[in-house]
Length: 128
Image (tube, rainbow, N blue to C red; front, side):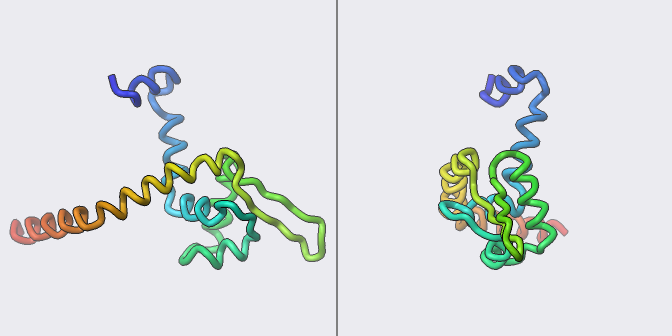
């Protein structure tokens, strides 16, 4: 029995909880937000500037979900204009090492993956 199967049996939910957490972490923007907040607090506009391509709507949604899941804290300062800063919680910080390991794996295997994709496309084109 794999570790995943064992975990699913312990929770008794068929892996639903694990899938929802992994869905959040593997979301298109989550790892970029987490990596950007590593070791620093940032305001929304600073975050948006540092994450190329993220829309205001998607960043807002991602931050809300991360706050809901306890990975990001949101601090509001009673100033005029209102100042809001985001930072990783301890749980969010604990995501940095596995995220970096995954990124390093991707970088290491880019040539193999690109070669496989090209070979696949070539086979698919010749089959048509």
